[in-house]
Image (cartoon, rainbow, N blue to C red; front, side, top):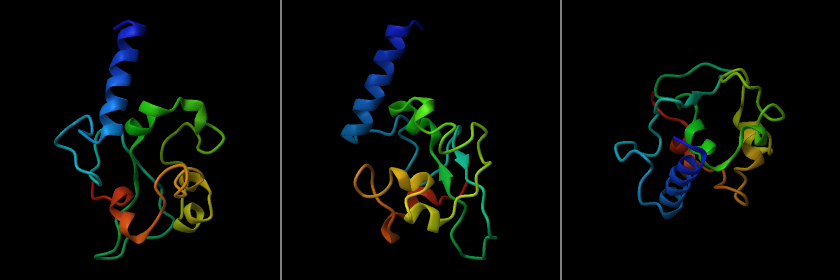
Length: 119
């Protein structure tokens, strides 16, 4: 696929995502991990019935941003190397740099399942 064709495919996917019509794969619901997603490193342990590990949807972010937006300033290139806590995110570090309710959807109790998913 040449550069122009890749751009058209990427633009089509972005338009679909922004319009909310599909998530590139119609069999993937919000909060469901797919190939290419990165489980974030936990600092604690899972408790029975507690929240599962947060999973970063790398493919979805890569549609919108180039690598240097996040790497290496916010995250190292190797996935799963950074331990991210909810305190970090709520204080505007790591994911919280964008997911602050102004740039992208903010962190809230109602948004838990967007990141914390069973793999």
